[in-house]
View 1 (cartoon, rainbow, N blue to C red):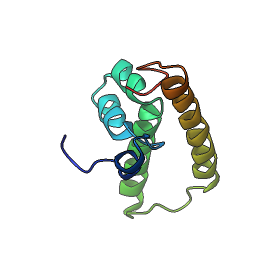
View 2: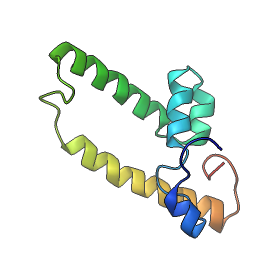
View 3: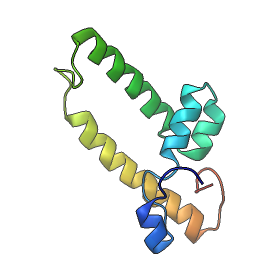
View 4: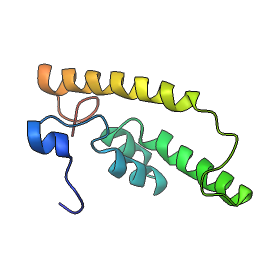
Amino acid sequence: MLGWPCPLRALTGIPCPTCFLTRATVAALRGNLSESIQLHAFGPLVAVALIAWCYTAISQRRLIPRGIPAWPLAVGAVVLFAYWLIRLMFSYGLGFRGAPGFP
């Protein structure tokens, strides 16, 4: 496997809330939405957020754009945590592989 492995998964064997999110985002940016959603439901959302961030940063000529509210990040973190718990239940509690569980 290329890159750094997930520290939580390496220590406990349990994937973290963002496990497979990078691969899902890349798949969404390449236009493969079905693969993206199978890897992580947040993949397409993160891809759209990255495109919006880049557009805003370039138009404002700032690495960290001004005027972006903080509440979407807090709501996203809560929903991501809930999604992670559901994935854990499906993968480890019910034995599913693939969506909605972990690949």
